[in-house]
Length: 90
Length: 186
Image (cartoon, rainbow over all chains, first blue to last red; front, side, top):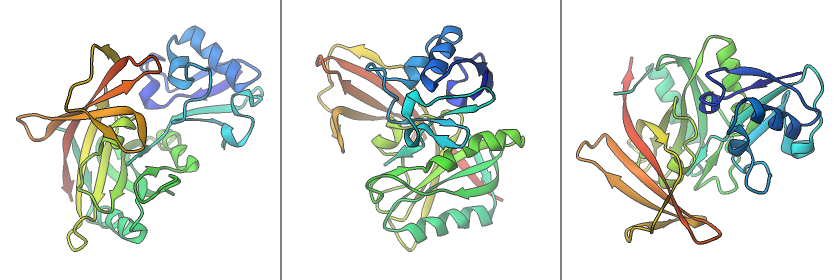
């Protein structure tokens, strides 16, 4: 199991929980596992082609997954996944 | 009305950050509790065109969970507008993903008199609409997005209507409510 940090904007989907447990061998598998219990969360993270949305960051422990293997980044029991929408604008 | 409470030191720190970064935009976080700022966290702006955009660096983004672990909240997200007013742009509304936090904008449009304002921005769901309104304008850097700004009689309240053109040439609208917050310097 891994621990997933849920940011405030997505907590409507997790019943207000800021931290949930999930399982999966990759980031993508973790997202699919979250979707089973928290329907709708996948669409907030992945686009229609199944790619990570441009303004969503996902971390495995301290590292953003674009610097690793993207959504195929492996995760191990005890890892901490953090989902973080961008803070951006013009 | 939402309210942001910060000390003169915090306020001056944000203005100083904006000046140091000029002519690029700067950005950062304000942590604290129930609208009251305890600390200013300067971030790096990693946007491709930092004179026109901001995008906070990944490590600072992660701080929101540290704040919570310490009983604090992400009170506000700040950025500077080097040459435009202290008011959310269409791009700011498009990227307003944090409805529980305030968005603080520090303008250096008048270099001698920086201004700071704070806003709550709440994005609605995206829904299909029959057609584009004729007043909708293109948004800089976005080929498939148009925007209409709609003020209200109450000048603290307004909304942006974002119109997304899908690959099938359908129009989908998302409304972003903009509400000005009071800033109290203590």
